[in-house]
Structures are given as structure tokens and as C-alpha cells.
Length: 117
Image (cartoon, rainbow, N blue to C red):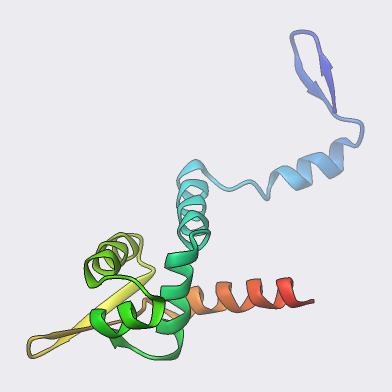
């Protein structure tokens, strides 16, 4: 791409650039995607996702597995729930957390595959 005074960018390969531009999603989608990757970019939240990908667990068990206090894990789970990374179910007084859906697990699986190749 070259800058052209006053008329915007001049592309060397215009058709390819215009086709590539179609891959840029709308602002709302980009912001949501960015938030998901920010969440998964934090080691603590990633550990939480990894254990919840295997088994639904209560806060105490998650805390024990990732080596954090229950209050720290609860705080992270609240953030993750707001972004629809995790969901929960209640059974009596206990609350069990799990990944929200298979998409989150698939993102993690793809990332692991990429790192290991």
C-alpha cells in the first residue's frame, strides 16, 4: 500500500486488498473477539479453562487445582462468566462451573496444537 495525498491509500494489488478487507469484521465483533483472546491470554484464566474443559467443578476444587484462593478464583470466574467463557449450575448449596460451550474448548485445543507443532 502507498499513501496518496488526499485520496486515501493506493493499493499495489487492489483486488487482493479488497478481498482481504472482507476479512475485517465489524467493530462489535472485533471487540468481542479481542476480549475473548485477552481472557485466554491470562495464565490464571487459561488454567481455569483447562481444568473446566475436563470436568465441571466447584470453586474450591478449581482453587485447589490452580493454586489460588477461592476468592481469587471466584473473582476470575465472575469475569469469565460475563464474557460467556464459563457457565454454572447449582445443586443445593453448591455451584458447579463449566466451560460455556464447545467453542471455548476448541479455541484452546487449536492453540495447543499450534504451540506443539
